[in-house]
Amino acid sequence: MAYYWNEAYRDDLVIVYENPTVFDRAWIVHDVRPAMDGQELQLLNSRQVDGRVTAFVDGPLPEVAPPAGSGPGDKVVVTRTEPERIELRAESSAPGLLVLSEVYAEGWTATVDGERVEVLRTNHALRGVPLPAGEHEVVVTYEPESLRIGLWSTGLASVAMLGIWGWALIDWRRRGWARRGIPPHREATDAAYRGLPTE
Image (cartoon, rainbow, N blue to C red; front, side, top):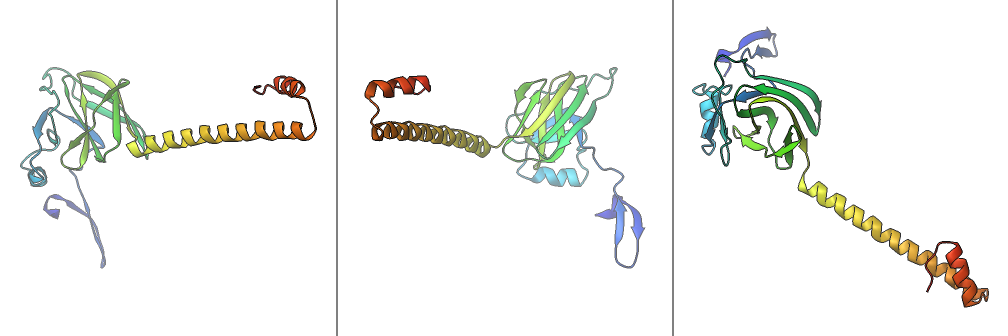
């Protein structure tokens, strides 16, 4: 596999190779083809297909067009990186597919200039974001469905617990008034004064 790599270091235990053709963190392609049940990896690894120019996508193909020959080339700058969020600035003279050198997984979402777009499984294991022509702000975040369900469940449980505690507090005060022999009208007055519901 190292036939196209440069040897950068060697000692008695290890050999370190430099890959002079390493891909960037993200790039834009204008040739998008349907996935081939894993065979696309063989084409990309054998260099029969240039991964900087062509991408293979699972599902419906996004709209792409050849870049304008006289215009500026595609530009992608990663402006912020966090474990569950990546922000980029992208510029292209024609519609294309922004490919991120990040592992694809269910739960990743993307916005282009604030508008939600689908994250596509690209080149078998990477993420792809459809991109219109022009300059754009792209944000890719990890928001799995399980997290949203968990947050909703936690919120509902918290509201239910607050309701139970509130009811228990009101009941406890009413029982206290009854033990002290406070008349019903006095109970209602005290409850109203304290902001509690009255019967």
